[in-house]
Length: 208
Length: 260
Image 1: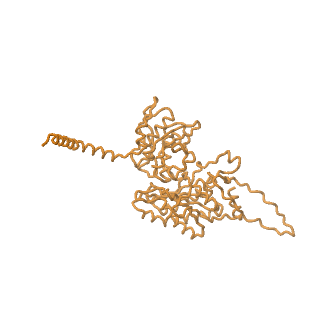
Image 2: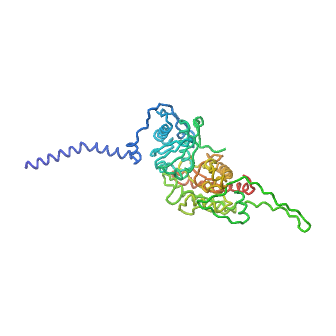
Image 3: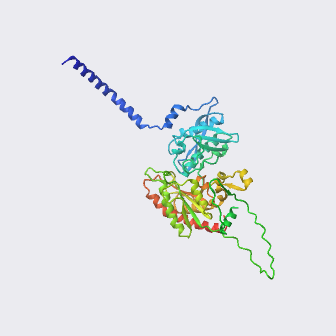
């Protein structure tokens, strides 16, 4: 057999062996990518969003309001360790990010995991303005009940941990939106309960 | 002033349908004008003062929410809120028409009028009530919640109210909060009697559709589209229709007697 053909066969055989060796690894990588689909927003957040921290951050026991698993249609406070800034604006951002990112499970979640807080301001009169990404609407379970509990969870969490916020305005991608997800009116301002009042467990209570 | 508007309609006077940018009369404590003195003379027989014009509830506007490209809540089995509420509205129409009421649906098919278009339809009727129908994506299956607007969400702009005595169109519900709450109570108690697990007292929430309706208005939300098939939701239909019809009958009595 000519030497050239022998060399070609040897090279091809080496390539086949190399392929067999690397194939399982490639297959595993493809499986990993398939099993964790990420939205554009999640990918963007991973790249862009650094955890908010300020020089005044102090680990505190923060009260965060998620859905209650024991009482239907209600929120309950959960105490978590969270480094919180002394600055009310930074503190509020940290709390809302925790409300989204640290929900213990889907059954307790009030805000979509895909949503992110784009901006947050507090006006001198105590009106807070929270600007969320589009996913706060597009990924929100639709309904009066779920939308009301979502806004209530933000208001209660801010009220329980930040001083001086009286009212809350919600924007979606920098704009006033008509509704949160087809039902709840975002035209007006939502009351933010005071520290003491916010700490109590709350239901989407019927009015008396 | 709202009462005056209702009175003028009952007397057959025409009114203009408010446009989206127009304003609506704000409610005011009415001060009865002194009645003109009637002195009977031999040539002019004494006449009884005219009876106050009767307020008659004539129309129910049913609002199957969403529609068209907006399916509203959608369950994993493909159940769409927009389809369910339309079928509920058709059943309610039959029950309400049996009481002699005129029933108007804000949509008859799979289209999607805007919030303001739906409100405009209701506000053009006067002497009506408005019921918006929803099916949620969450909540205990088979339960029903009834909502009216909270007062805080509708506080009128004091500058406009003080200057003109008028209420902005975008807060038209402000003058009807008490009546809406009463209607919500009556509907919710009917739901509690029919659907186990439903509250006996109604809820308050700033529901967008209700804000621009200048009439007693409530939203009814059924749980939920998150069921394996639509049969359980279809089974709720007759009970919903009957409960709403009974609640409207009770409200009609209160409404027409001038109570709250």
